[in-house]
Length: 434
Ligand code: SAH
Ligand code: SF4
Ligand code: F3S
Image (cartoon, rainbow, N blue to C red):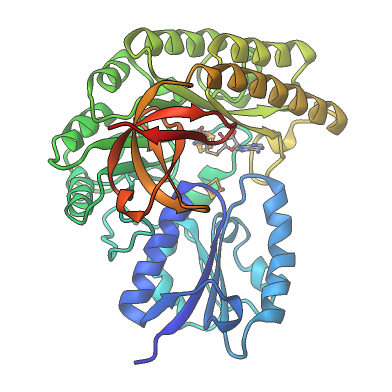
C-alpha cells in the first residue's frame, strides 16, 4: 500500500506536542499515514493550535490561507488543539476549505473526524483519561507522558480551562505502564505533562487508586532502567514540604524546577487568582534551595496585567533579583475571550507594557550572564538527545543546562561527563571527560 502523507504543524506547549504524537500514532495505525515535512506532497495537513495569547490565533487564518493555496489537489486541512476548542465551527465559517475541527480534549477522535465531512468535535468535557493511544514518539530517548488533562484553576487571564476542560488525572497504572514501555524501548528519561502536575490525584474519571503527585514520582522512580524524571508545569500553590523534600531526595528526579511566578506583586497575584502571595513564593524557593542547593529554577512572567502599577512591577523585579531564575519565559498580558480578566477595565497602555517587558528581559539576561560564568570548568552529567550542525551533539544536564560537544550519533541516548569549556546564552559547549 502506498502510504498517505501527513504534514503536521504543532504550536503551543508540550501538551500540544504530545497530542500531536497521539494523533500521528492514530493516523499511522488506522489510516496508514506517514509524516512529511513537505506541505505540497501532503494528503492531510494538520495545524495543532495554541490560543494562550492573541497573536497566534490571528496568525492561524493567514496561515490557513497559505496552506490552502499551496496544498495539492484533494488534500484535507484539519485544525486541532486549543484554538479549535474555543472557536469551533467559526473556523469552518471563516475558512470553508477546512475539512474538520478537533478540540484539544478530543484528539483521540482524529481518525473519526477525518472521514466525516466538515466535522467539528470540541466537547471540552469529553473524557480521554483512560484512552490508550497507539505508540508514537518523536524522540526515542525522552518520553513525554500525560499525567493529567485539563485544568481546574481559574486564573483570571487564562483561556486553558476553557480549551482543555476540567482537570482529570490519568490512572496511575496507565502512567506506569506507559513509562515502562518507553523505557523498554530505550528511553532513559520521562517527562510528565499536565497544566498542574502537582495537583495530580485530585479527580479521576472512574474508580481508580488515588495517590498524589509525590507518590506518583516515588512509584515511577522504581522503574528499572529509568534514569531521569522531569515534569511540567507544577503550581507554586501546591508545592508543599513533602513534595519539595521528595524532589530533593530522589536521585532520579532532575534538579530543575519550573516555578511559574506570573507576578511578584501579591496584589496582582490576588487579581490573577493565583492562590499564593509574593511571600509564599519566596518561602517556597528558599525551602527548595535549602534542600536542593544545585536546583535550577525557571519561571513564567506576565507583565502589564490589568491594574499592574509601577510599584507592582517593581515587586516582580524584586523577586527576579532575589531568586535569580535560570530561565524566564515572559509575556505581555494578552486579553483572552471567556476569561474573567477580559472584562477588567484598568488596562495598562501598550507602550508601558513594552517598556516593562524590555526591562524584565534585560534583567533576566544580566542574571543569566552572571550565572553562566559559574558553569565554566564545571563537570556535568549530560544525557545526549540531538544531532545538531557542524558535527555537534546536544543534550541536557540534570539541572537542565543545554550542552553541546563534538561527536556523532553514537552519543545519542548516552550519559557522559562533560566539562564546560565555553559559555553561550542558550547553549554551553563542553568536552567529554568521562
Ligand atoms: N499551567 C501553567 C501555565 C500554562 S500557560 C501554569 O499555571 O503556570 C503558559 C504560560 O502562558 C503561563 O504561565 C503564562 O505566563 C502565559 N499566559 C497564559 N495566559 C496568558 C495571557 N492571557 N496573556 C499573556 N500570557 C499568558
Ligand atoms: Fe491557566 Fe492557571 Fe490553569 Fe495554568 S493553572 S493552565 S495559568 S488556569
Ligand atoms: Fe496553548 Fe493550549 Fe498549551 S492554549 S499553551 S496549546 S494548553
